[in-house]
Image 1 (cartoon, rainbow, N blue to C red):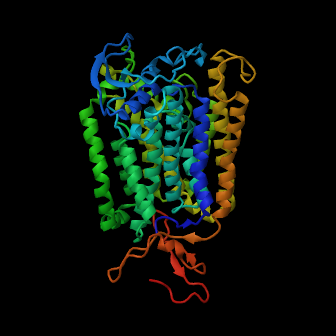
Image 2: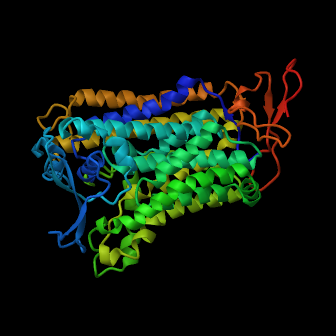
Image 3: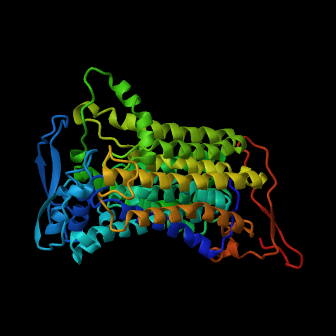
Length: 561
């Protein structure tokens, strides 16, 4: 068997994971100024236009006043309520201006008469906007933008719940929780609390990594994946593919990484299973729709950035920015004007390295090679993606763009480290406490840094709590208290998952035999409590376990096939 069986949890623990993430996203939403998330005005207008019957608007191109922008900017002209049409002017006075605060921003108001508006997000796939844009049909921007943020936070949290539910089938639930928490970097909490499809894309990618791994491992072991895992695989794959322009590529890379990491013998076993081909024939439909939309939408016309210096080689410029992109992927806020928050980034990287260290000592050589490939590929992606067009279209990359691939590092690392968690439960317990505590402290630090910048700007005093300045809908003290309470939930939930993980071991549903029909969904999870599972180690380079041998408990009757 190439992955350890999961452990059952009380239902409330499973549901508590997405609820905890949702609470954190909502706190970030309230603490972030209106239109304080990058490109939020364009995405909000796009969401409103979708709910006013417009997949696309009339495409217009406008020359930029900024001499560093080398190409005209392509916009969609759409018709939306007036308060939404005025959103681009809200952050203009403070976005990327470290000496100004959101106090200068005008109130968007609630006017609902229809008028023309421009959005650069027109070519983006419409799925995310259809999921969050419904408030624009009922209320103006003063209320609707907050409701859109909450709707987006709910969808992102649900996807992370799917990720945890799938990954816990392969590793201990406490280690699964650590992996999902570390994959969801502080910038994802920030993005998920705003109107921006990038947060949705990253959450969908985390879910697709976990569900793809759970499906592939089950099929390689000769088992039929649980129905909930297969549904999660299809939904998260479709959500990812239909998120942004690079999303279908990310979905393919994720699937390729998961298939390669199990080894060629297990890969052949997966490819021989009918379930595998049935799942991917279904998934191919949204994938093809996404590719078709992207190829015909003209998305490249909205991608632009500053020109690289002419007196420096392109490789030097791009290579020298690799660490900056990595930092941005963890903790950069506002319109790229707050952070990177090094005091949160370094502990976060340290916590990920703890998981990778456990994988290093107990993972097979091939799995570690593939894991290293995912890490190197994620870090090198900005260089590869920008190289062909950097001189003509400028450098438009931001660190958050590579997160759909980068999140695979802690997720795969946790799966590889499953043997460590079983053999050394005390050391695993310390790893869980340290990692979840790092998550909690880093989230609090990032909240304080973001609030300090918004209240008193760059050069203002560090004590922002009692100084006159910008204030979120809730008081600063209330927001700090809410942040601390929610962040504390990560080590607490990690501890509860650790204790609940001791209850009993379960496996996915066994594959149907030729002689009989398939068993009921989740049937393996209803195994007799008297069963115990033995997993003799097999010799091999990957250090994996054999398929568990089910030994019936006393008085349990004859064993099932």
